[in-house]
Every structure is written in C-alpha cells, then in structure tokens.
Length: 263
Image (tube, rainbow, N blue to C red):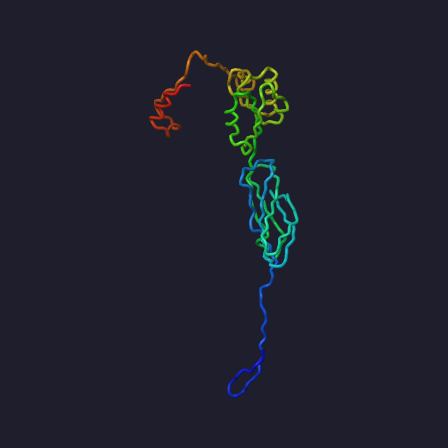
C-alpha cells in the first residue's frame, strides 16, 4: 500500500506499508510423556510389559528415531519407532526381570529441541517366588488353598504330587517340600527327602499318622511324637488367669466362648 504521511506544516512525504505473514515455526519435537508399569505383582524370571506414551508436537513432520530402555543400569531394549505428525503414540515394550528387589529403569529417545522430555524414569518392584512341592493325597484341598490362595499371582509356585507318584525330578525342581496328609512316605521316600534336605532344600512336615518317622529323620533335633487316642475324646482350652497381651483385642465374652470350644 502506498500513500502520503502528513508532517508538521505543509510538508508531505510518501510511505509504503508491507504486510508480512508471521507464524510460529513447525517445531520438530517428540515428548516422552509417560511410562506405565505393570499393576500386578512381578516375580523374578518373569517378563514385565511397559507402555511408553509419546507425543509429536510437529503439525507436518513425522518423526522416526530409536527408543532405548535400560533396567538396572543395563540396556535391555532398543527399537525403531515412528510418530505421526501432531500425533499421540503408545508403544508396548517387554523387559525381562532377572533379580528381586527394586530395579531402576529409564526410557530414552534421540535428543531434540527440548532435552527435558527425552527421558522418563521408572522403578519396578520384583519379588522372589518360592518353588514348593506339596506331597499329599486327596485330603489336601484346604492345605493347597492355604499355600497358594491366589494361584499364579502368589509368591509361592505350587506343584502337587501324590505320596506314591512323586520322584527325584520333582524334588530337583523344588526349593521346599511340604509333607501333607495321605498314605505317608515309604522308607525309600524318606531317603529321597533326606538327600533333598542335605543338599540345601527345606522340608515342612505336618505331623500326622504316617509322617512321624519322616519328621524324626529330617529334624535336626531329637523328637518324641505321640498321637492321642481317639477314645480319650475332645480336648478343651481353659481361660487363662491373666489375659496375655496377644489376646487383648478380645472381650471377656470372647474368652468365655473360646473356653467352651472343643477340638
């Protein structure tokens, strides 16, 4: 546009105005916005699945770059990804967890205009899982539920074998052997269990008719085991003369009800 500009007095000077389009540049920046960790219990030897969320601030340019995941100071994943213009992107990443405890991790991408959003840190709590072999017969339902009430998510990996079906291979895959109800061990079974304990395994013996000899052999201390005759009837508990500290939450009515129990 051209025109004249009025000044002081009668002098006039011509001027020219230029209109220039001004806009912000198309910024090429991808932000690592979040790292979602598993919401279930993790155990040593399992695979953890992470979800990495990214956002591309560019309206026109797709961004392609390597994504790195490190866990416990060691790089465990590196993969190439692409994020569309002005797009949100979620990438699923699986990492192995090989030891228990708190493991610190970091997700990184190639540096760009804003380095502050090129890395995200996370932590995984990994627990150990005991490999338990339950040796019992049909009467062990409630014992199985007590050992592993939640199934696969528990800290106990439970395997069950019968008294006449368990073998050396079952013990080799276990850390703890639980001797439960059933037909009980034969002499060769007790010898197998003795070798298992001598080589570092652990044994828990429920004292039942049929397991007392195994308990005596596997214990580090001399045991005297005797079972009450069923003809003697039920046992009962007596109310203590002075309430011990661990019974403090119970009322006098509760204690009187306990004293009426027979087992």
